[in-house]
View 1 (cartoon, one colour):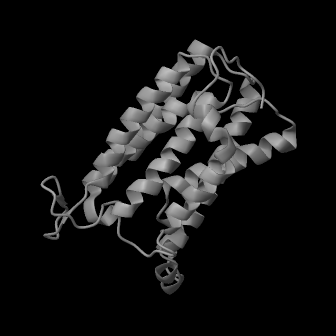
View 2: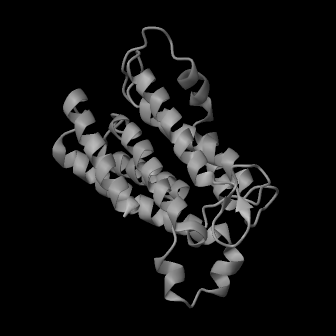
Length: 235
């Protein structure tokens, strides 16, 4: 229910942003970009989910739910961005098209995490065991970090920051990059509080976050300290 609510709310926020700020591309191109994002996101979400615990994925490879169930937000985000960039390159679209998705993406994530929290142990998004007073027992007698609630709070703060930056001079595409990189940085940190297999100290999702952050590393200083009076610019 909350996953569906996340999609509906995010789309409503997107439509409102589009009415207020316009769209750098026409309706047909926008639809194609959305399809590319959806296909890339679906593939990326599933592939990264299989890599979270490769031993378990291999052991259950003959089960249908191994291939149909399970997805990761980070994989979906990275796959979606890659799908859009590949499509734009093939079509010769040079304008950055992501700013309209920045706030809707973060709003959708925060609503979806409510469902993750209510699902409990079956969702596998909870944190490691903790003795902190706000630890949550999801039904097995172990108090754990409610990382789903941490993420909701982080997304609210990130929405506030992106909204603040939207009211200041910024280059076209900067808002989505702030949301995108902000989420990857958050997941890189918060996943230290989650159980699961690790390689060289990091889980598969964290390594994916590192890869995404490295791709845009040279832009991070500019994004965090935009020039005064900076105007919109093409990709």
